[in-house]
Image 1 (cartoon, rainbow, N blue to C red):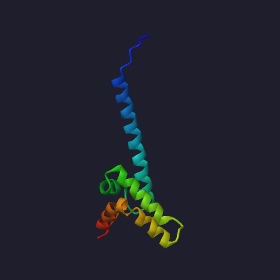
Image 2: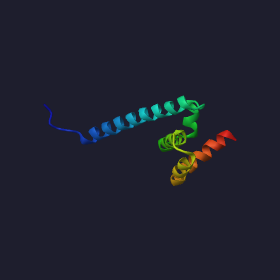
Image 3: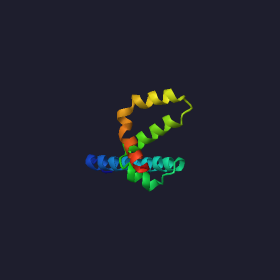
Image 4: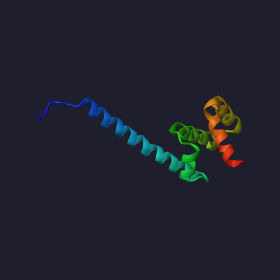
Length: 96
């Protein structure tokens, strides 16, 4: 039995597995968002190519669709306005 462990290869394999898992998770999130909006998967990927933006979009949608009253929703959006600003601009650009 070979006792030599190639730590670089192990690290590379782990990084690749993490990247693949993240990519599958991103695809599921995009698919979920498209299933509850009028946007298609490709449109969402085009509008929000960064995973972090897709997550922010999902967070914003969660706030909007919550059962909370309008003022609470507004306060939550204002609290996260720096995070949501780019998302809002992208969405409004698509609408206009």
